[in-house]
Image (cartoon, rainbow, N blue to C red):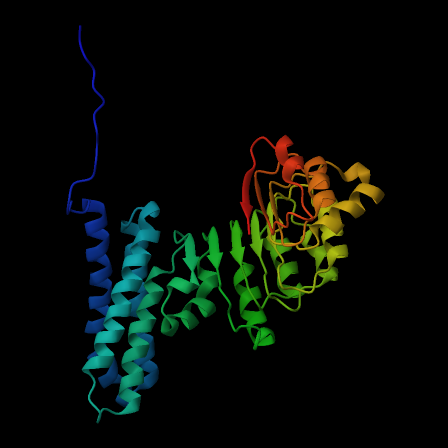
Length: 337
């Protein structure tokens, strides 16, 4: 009789990193070193011929980018980007602290520009994941202006961009970039999305699955007509836009693939309207239900109209909401606030 005992596998204390992760870390450090080696030569050349200094630096960046694109396996480029951005960010801080009070402003700015410029070595077709929030602020303008080079992007989080203060100015650069991002599936544009940007997305980003345009004041009910043309869209976030309950009705009726519309405090009213006036559009494919105001009638409608709901977040008032209606949702994960 052989007794088979389960083998417990756990990570070792202070276990060393894999060769792959160590290699990427060292390669990121090497990229930062290349930027550091260019600081003084570029500064000296810029004193006599600024244009030639810029051209020489751009050529150096292009050579390194081509070298990385050829020799680094495609599936490791995202990891390399994280390591390189971290190393370049550290170099920025070290360079700032090493400058004395008497250094000229032009020399300081020139050194910062060289380090930031070296970020462009990462801009290859194999770079698939970009979250601007994880990029140091000094490097973000390079990403905004050169996004069109990242033709292999699958995930793009542009964050809050200008926070809605310079929407018109940001629009042209966003549109220019989106025209080249044909394999994009996840896109986040908060505050600065416009109808022109949406039209560009519909035309060039046909594989889009998730779109977040929260807090964009230019998004209104009229914008829904554009969004419904995204046939593969499964998730849309419209919270704090000017889309009213009528817009959500139009969205749910004409975009049958939607599984998540984010937080919609009037979702009960939306479902009630569809139930009374467009019953042929039911059932809906929604799997996520988020609302602050949901009474017992709305919850019952949600169960009938959206039988696939797996996640529900509501503000629960025991005097207004009876949760017994939710027993029919077998796969539900409930969140009360």
